[in-house]
Length: 181
Image (cartoon, rainbow, N blue to C red):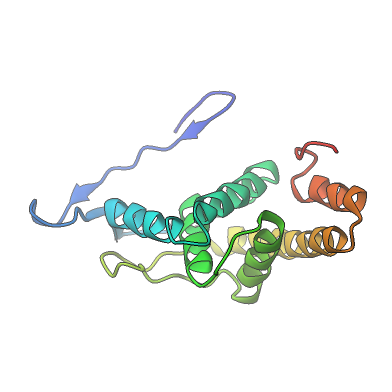
């Protein structure tokens, strides 16, 4: 792992398993043991397709960025890739994008499905998990439950016109890193 104060990078070995004339598919180390297949080009294509749909233009990536900010600011041990792919899947059935409304709905949905493993939406690679172990999953679910509750209180305050309370809950949701009003 390479890190500085602002960013952390992990480098994984990957071995291409698909023919060169097809979508690149790689074997990469699995979260616990063994290897799993990954299709980064196909995954990016999926996110971009959803992100460009009329009505939600940009919404899938914006939602993924909000989810990743929540993850980093609260030190949640969940896969960023999982959050991004689930954000695209969530937005794929929406007809519009509103930051607070959809962040709330997304976090509540993740809690409802209990961070279930996800099939590759492009059918190119392995099923993938949100977390690397039972312990990190338990921690993530606990933090997710709290986040979903705070997001709901934020959305309810916003709907009621109580901007001050909405900002207070956003501050809690993003561990004090959300700008004050």
